[in-house]
Length: 312
Image (cartoon, rainbow, N blue to C red; front, side, top):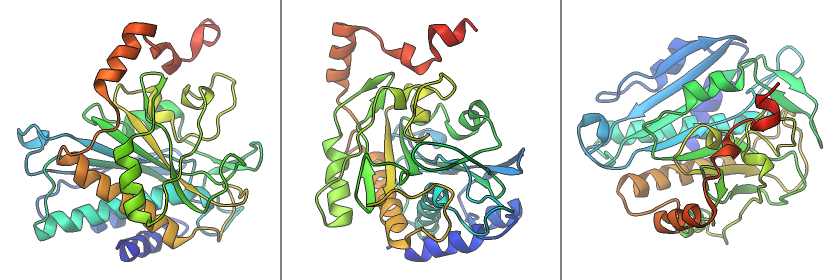
């Protein structure tokens, strides 16, 4: 269970200012390199933590490397709103999963492969219009976020984000997206569905995504939210972990986070890390992906802003 870790992270984040030294202190443990924390405009703290594996590539091994990223607009919108907003849940879940992995490492439960945990912390983000409800808009541009949050060493990525501001899914808890790789929306990973089912004790839930959602922000088309933006800057397979609700909730609403839903998403990320770092699961079928590319060609152009945007 990760409820304690969720509560620790909420206590850390739910205040007007989040000092970088407090964040670093929470994730400090023997054998774990200190968290990389960089201040950007906003102010925004860009957070990256490596939890080394016993056979991880960071120490000369060959076990797979997983990335867990909390991709959002902001955790708060002071002074307009006091408290954590709905959009904060992806950040909270990512940091809770990272804290659990650090504590496991400290206690001797080292995973075979490396795990990167990344997110950004902004307590003074701007509220922006979005259909159907308002969202949070990070003061840090998307290119800067991608540079900090998506590491080339990640061989697969879980992207955690609140996804309540829509009528696409009507389920309280968390849902998974199909795997996205190099512009292709692939079949949903059966391995991940099984872990979701094990973690929740319920039938797995899948969030529908579209071609628009896997293209970069800035091209003028509708995006459900920013959860799939990591897929625009990496060749690694990306799966969204969407923290969801039965009803439409604004990303800027406060008092709407459910600790049990955040905990389930964080626990899912930890279980995926265990299995992926041990080489026992996959995010996609490499042979089938290769066949798709051979049959239909590369879809990497969907990772760009497109011809019209490139020419402006």
